[in-house]
Amino acid sequence: MDESSKSLPTSHLLGSVPAVISEEKNASNYEVPEANLQIFPPNSRGERGRGYQTLGSPTEGFEQQPANGWKGVFNISSYIQFFDVDTDIVLNRLMSSFYPSGGDFSHKIDANPDLYGLIWISTTLVFVLAAFGNCATYLMQKHSDSSTSWSFDVSYMNVAAGSVYGYVIVVPLAFYFLLQYLGTKPSLVRFWCLWGYSLFVFVVSSFLLLIPVELLRWIIIILAGSSSACFVALNLRSYIEGSDLSLMVVAAFFLQMALAIFIKVWFFP
Image 1 (cartoon, rainbow, N blue to C red):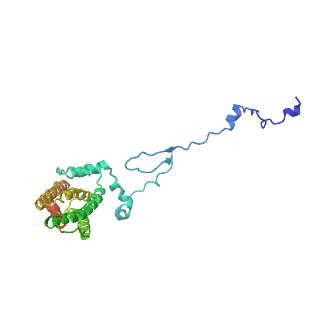
Image 2 (tube, rainbow, N blue to C red; image 1 turned 45 degrees about the vertical axis):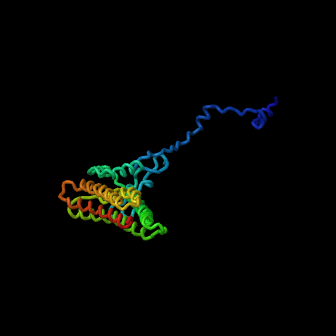
Image 3 (cartoon, rainbow, N blue to C red; image 1 turned 120 degrees about the horizontal axis):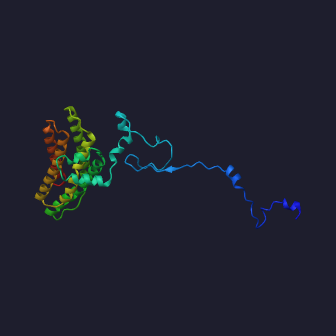
C-alpha cells in the first residue's frame, strides 16, 4: 500500500474502528468531577418541610427564630410551635377532657401546650350552637303546636360567636393577670389550652340537647357543665398547688357552670 494512503484519516469510513487511547494518557487528562451530594434533613419536630439542601450549605435562611419581647406578638413564626400537634395528640387531649382526674391534663400539656384545640373547638361549638339551637327551638315549638313553620334565627350565630369566643379568651386572660398579680407564675398559653379543651363536652352534649324533653335537657346540661367545671377547676388547682388560692378554683368552677346554664337558657329554651 502507498505511504500517502496510510496517512489518510479512516475514522469516517464505514466499519472503521477508532484508535484506542492509551490508559496512561487517558488517566493523566481525566479529572473526577466534584461530587455535589444532596441530603434530606431529618423530619423532626423542629425541622419540617425544608426539602433538601446541599451538603455544607448554610441553614440560616431556613430557620427563623421567633422574636423576643413584644416583637414576637406580631411575628407569625412565634405561634408555629403552638400548632405543632398531630391527630393522636389532639384526640388524646380531647378524651382527657372527659375525665378530669385532678391535673392529668395539665401534665400532658406542660411540654407542648397548643392553641389548635382552642380555635378548632371554639369555632365548632359556635356553629353547633347556632345550628342545633335553631333546630331545638323548632322541635319544642313543633311539639306544642304542629302548625309551627321552620325559621332560622340568624341572631343565634352572633350570640354564639360573641359568647364563646369572648368567654374562652377573656376568662383565661383574667385568671392569668390575677394569678400573676397574686405572686404566681402562670402560663397564658396553657390557660387558653385548658379552657379551649374544656368546651368540647358542650359540643358533644349539644347533639343530645336536640331531644325535645325539657327535664332531660336540664339533666344533660348540668352533667356536661359539671364535667367541664371539674375539668377546669382540678387542672387549675395543679397550677397553683402550694398556694392558698382556693377561691380561684371555686370561681373557675362556677364560671364554667354559668356558661353551661347560659347555653341551655339561650340556645335550647
